[in-house]
Amino acid sequence: MKDRTRRSFDKEFKKMVVELHKSGKSSNEIGRELGIPGNMVRRWSREYESNGDQSFAGNGKPILSPEQREIAELKKALKEAQIERDILKKAVSIFSKSDNKYSGS
Image 1 (cartoon, rainbow, N blue to C red):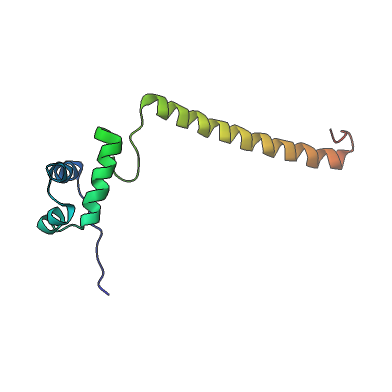
Image 2 (image 1 turned 135 degrees about the vertical axis):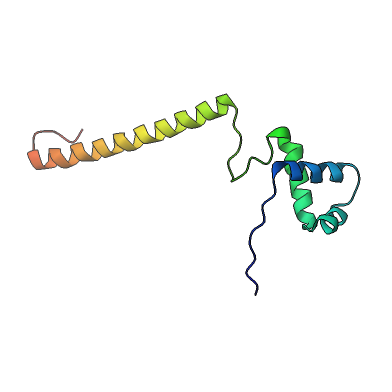
């Protein structure tokens, strides 16, 4: 089995492939001409159809609107606060058992 390196394609190339596909050429024909699999052409076309100009962000990082970015940051902060709260609850229960000062409420 050959060691194959993963090829990467820039956003402009992918857009060009999608435009060729929209013009009526079959995905397999485009794939043969450009040396890429036909299913990749179809996948890029679907992605562009659903996300428009925000498609092909690269490195698996979606392009987020400012509102989506703020929501993601708030979710992250909430999760951290919940983890800290759980740690403090456990610490209180551990110390209250050893001190016998606090009831278990």
